[in-house]
Structure formats: structure tokens, C-alpha cells
Length: 190
Image 1 (cartoon, one colour):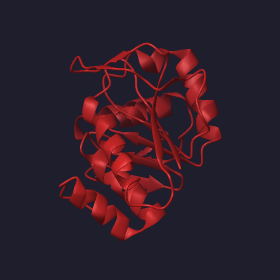
Image 2 (cartoon, helix red, strand yellow; image 1 turned 45 degrees about the horizontal axis):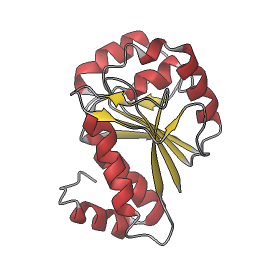
Image 3 (cartoon, rainbow, N blue to C red; image 1 turned 30 degrees about the vertical axis):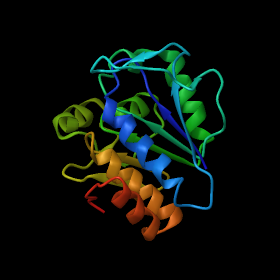
């Protein structure tokens, strides 16, 4: 299983590190190899919202074919207006069996025009903004994550961990998801 997590300047650390750790930990408990990589607009280090510098594995200009593409949330105002990123996301999502967003990452998918009509969620503080800016979405509040066919969106920050555990459960079974949560010492909301 090949998983790509899209990050960008001002991304929220736990929005990508939480799912990254879930998928890497799951690799220990499955008989199928799970490879997780970080993808960014360029190969340059990404400066997170808290100032942490992260080196992406790939840029949007060259990466493996993904089974799952996850877009992390954060302060997205700059990246959401990058036409190169939006074209890449739209094209990559079309050829990716499953796509997901954590927190405000859903705004980037919405801006790329590839989740129209989907049931989605985001951080509680951004629900109204998402509804206003993208009325073509069915925005659901007070849910940790929403599954709408091949698109999964989660609420804020730690909800991305629950969403990722749900993805592991659907792919590898409840016992694997439980082992991952136990190993991470995480009290899951599944």
C-alpha cells in the first residue's frame, strides 16, 4: 500500500504526523507492506505552522502512484491559491483509489473542484467558512470523520488519527487497528 501525505508551508504538525504514525505503526502488524511518504509543492523543506522544518520525500513533480492520498490541514491560504498545486491535486486524485483530508485540508480538495457534492467535515472552527465558501459540499458538523465513497474527511487535528485508524480497520481488520491504537497508547474514538 502506497500512501502519500501532502504537506505545505504552515501545515499543522499533528495533521500529518498523526496519520503518518498510524500508517507506519500499522506496517508492523500487517503482512502487506505500507509505505508512507510526504509530498510537498517542491523538494524544499516545509516550515510547519509551529516552525518545525520538515523534509518531504517527494515533490508534486515526481512521486509514486498512491493508493491513498491524504491532504493535511493548516494555514492553507497560500497553497489554496497555487494553480500548480490545484492542477496536481485534481489530476492525482483522479488516479488515486482513495483520498482523505485532515482538518482544513478539505478546503484544498474543494478549491481543486474534485469533491463537489460530497459529505465532508472539518475542524469545528472552520465549519461555517467551509459551508459558505463551498455551498456545493454537504458539510457535516460534530463528527470525527465522514466517509463518502472513496473520500474521507476528518475534523480537527487528532480526528485525523481516528480517521487513519478507520482506514486501517477497513483495509486490514479491526484487530490490526486495535493493535495500532494500543501500541500508540491512543484511546481511539472508533
